[in-house]
Length: 166
Image 1 (cartoon, rainbow, N blue to C red):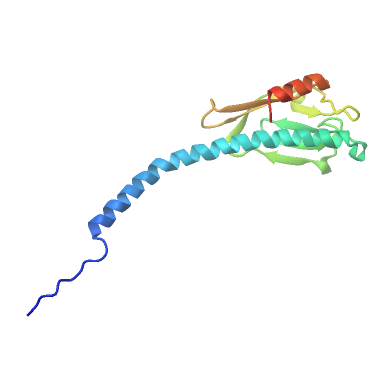
Image 2 (cartoon, rainbow, N blue to C red):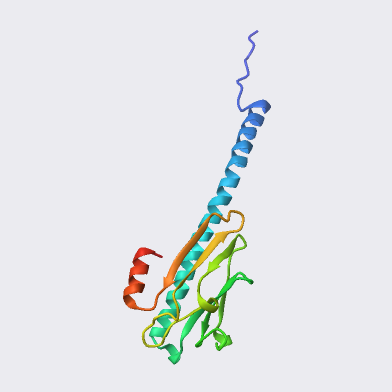
């Protein structure tokens, strides 16, 4: 009588548990890193979005769309910025407001615009003032992005925009 040997297929329970343990450890290591990458991406995207909104306000003003001026108001307490139509935020057409709220992981660090707003002149497209906006991560305040967005004359604005690409 011959004894047939059973061929072993598959994995033992110990091998599966070791493999799962290794994957769990790798996952715990990768999770905080992916969170930091997500926050950094939000910071960069928000900075670009603010630059885009400022350029939109300038473009709409230059196009004399409805013969109005456009601007952006930065509200530190509400952690948001508002695209508005009018000569100032106080004299704006509230129906045209577009509010943008910062991500929960972000906050304004500094806003160096008078009254926290930028308004563009109808004919020239120059801003009412020169300044900058800094945004930072709440959990890592040393991680800040700051850009100077506006200037009063074309030479200065071009120099700043070439120096601080958006």
